Length: 266
Image (cartoon, rainbow, N blue to C red; front, side):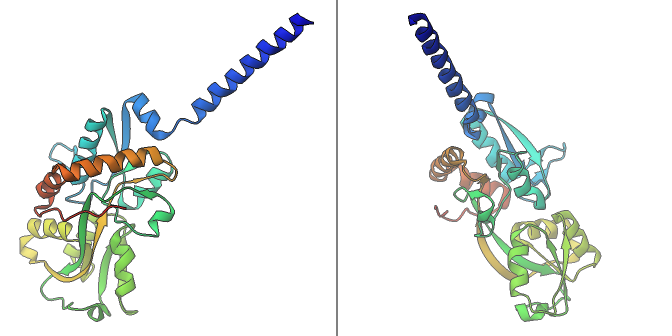
């Protein structure tokens, strides 16, 4: 009888240990896995200057890319970039293709339903711009005009709300397509970040592109999946420290040409 009891005790103990091991493995979060594998997957949009671009060698660059590289370096891991269009920034994260998205995603309540925002790492102004012959001085002037907007951007979230019913919104899947539509005359004007507008203007001086209307100024931030609190907390800590030591400001100024404003925290 004692042998039976001893056997049952040992068996039960082994079973409990096995269950604990399985539970521990299944409970591993993204942050633990990043530290274990020494690699973090970051979704970026390289068609959104100055935040994300491809350099002359075809390699990712821009303020978002520089921020991600510095963050990975300080975390002590390798960074793997997952290149996505504007519309794919949130889906790439939610589907698990990326651990975090750093792609100048402006903070909105609607987006917060699908993902968790970290603290902001930059700010952007949305403008409507076009050639000199297009008269847009107020939202009412958008009536009857063709306005190019890139999907899944702050432009999509703000411009249609302020535009009168007669505005003809023309949708594009990426910034490059929106830009080309403006340059070719497919649209009368386009909505973009001020930084993107400056790049378009610099690259096409003969078009004399100018700001017509400032729509809004917003803050953008990295995003992680819901319940990834450990990863979000580490990123927030990193953002806090690098906002104070000037690293974020240095990256922002290098790529945008303007000073980083004071960043809010949640």
